[in-house]
Length: 463
Ligand SMILES: Cc1cc2nc3c(=O)[nH]c(=O)nc-3n(C[C@H](O)[C@H](O)[C@H](O)COP(=O)(O)OP(=O)(O)OC[C@H]3O[C@@H](n4cnc5c(N)ncnc54)[C@H](O)[C@@H]3O)c2cc1C
Image 1 (cartoon, rainbow, N blue to C red):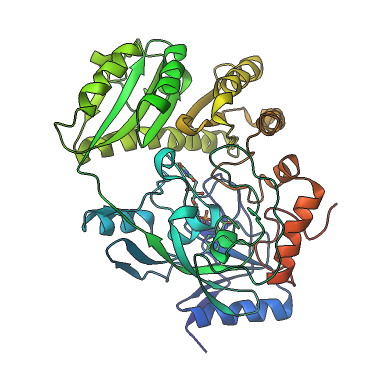
Image 2 (cartoon, rainbow, N blue to C red; image 1 turned 180 degrees about the horizontal axis):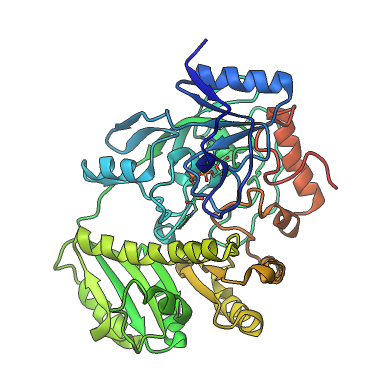
């Protein structure tokens, strides 16, 4: 027997995620090595017991929240080895520890979901992205190799380029720059691409080899305020092409109003803001000057905006950005509502149309009780509604409308959070029955007893 801590007295924090969604489980297993994981899965497969894989629980779609059966936590998989250009990280390593260790060698790991207490396994499981994906893409291209334990106890070691051992059809892929809904199936695809974003339904990721990049010499960061929303949206259109920032993040006026409780220094004239980061070759890089020109051209409130090039400045702006979803989640917890947020992205050319659609529908139903913010560089904005508890159904209905609109514009129902259990009903908006059936076929190959991540993405059969 390999070391596996097993208990039925489960700490309730394991039974929920950051969306407030709660579940229950009969047992929690905390294995210390891959053989231990294999033994748990083999037993569960034989006894046909559902197994939910738990990362750090910062997910917002209920993927790691069990609805019965067993829960397996990877928290003991904490190996972390930093090399030049790569890191070997156990599934339980927190992103903030990976980043700190990489930074000590003047390197960085590009994927940056602003929630740095997420763990490596969870971020690979969801194909997480975030602010820096504007330049670097989501987690997927930064994963070089994986160790995965399958439902039958087989331990797979797979590297980039090693093709899946059974035929996989190609299914449609949205035209948005990011996508995290369902399996991204392509004929001839490799194992790594199959497991990234599979949301704990195909195997337990225990360790990953990740790409590290050299840290830039200098980074210019800024929270740039605008007197009108239209000016901010014009600036995004301009800066996407005239500059090469690594992030362009958006805050609408309601977002700034909510943030004011923690950041009273937000200028009173501000109606919108953009957070940018630009990598520079040094403090005298001519790009610094060009940003001043760009901001003047965009009619930004330059004198009231915040800029910096130190790590401390960047951290201050990161905290500012991260405070928004945190404050939304806190507000919802107080009202007893689950998180009511969208994660749609559209092709870049439809960004304005989507923002206008969000705003028109939200002002009709939830005026003064929503925020729109996030990764506008990728035309990927989060709408978070702050409904009264009895309005949850109306909020859910409007989020459905947004998902349909995003798909009609060639986009995705989920760009980074995945669908988990809470948003599994969006999968048929994105994909045809045949495409979902192709995903089921893949799952049956790897998990014929259908034990892993039950309730996430799709059921074994329709209806
Ligand atoms: C305030 C806030 C801000 C956020 N901002 C962002 C953002 O900018 N970008 C973004 O992408 N997300 C964001 N998120 C969502 C969340 O941080 C990500 O979805 C993250 O990837 C979840 O990681 P986790 O370790 O917490 O996973 P969990 O929530 O524990 O699990 C997520 C999913 O991954 C599966 N999983 C976990 N570990 C493994 C494993 N070892 N093997 C296989 N499957 C596994 C689970 O079964 C589940 O389906 C935010 C969340 C919060 C609370």
